[in-house]
Length: 221
Image (cartoon, rainbow, N blue to C red):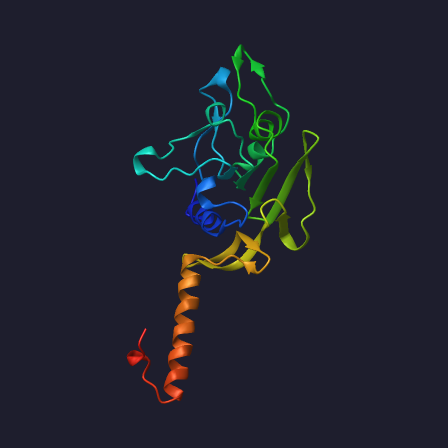
């Protein structure tokens, strides 16, 4: 059964995904949202742990929030998909070449790999197995996924001017090795980290003013 890791990890991915080349309103991020991919089998779907769609507007009205993502209605495939592996799901998430199997007259769905590679042709398929601290990146080339070398467990996406890597730290009060976005300046800060940095700056400024004989509470804004 899934534990809190999946929610916390996808929260961190969403919070730190801030590419400079795409405004938030022109980028759709989803975690655990059904992804429908075949109009002739419209009950078939996959549920990626986290995925990104570029060029699709983020819904800004609560009553219009997406319940799922339908490829043939949106007309844009995800740009990147991430699966968080576990001992129970790794074999299914990485299984290949099982399209359209027919067993005893029952048509089975293709695997995630087959959907991402051969049907949706998603440019990047990324897996992270926290149990063995293994990050893998598969890049689409000529219609086929190839494993990509990721020195120091970091992978740079030039189109986004953004990178994805493993970060050791504390997020939402939990210490661990997390998958997180970074840019040229380093790890993209979370809202809590930004607030903490701003608080530290304010404390330093107040200390400096006091050292100059000034009361920081009486400084006009």
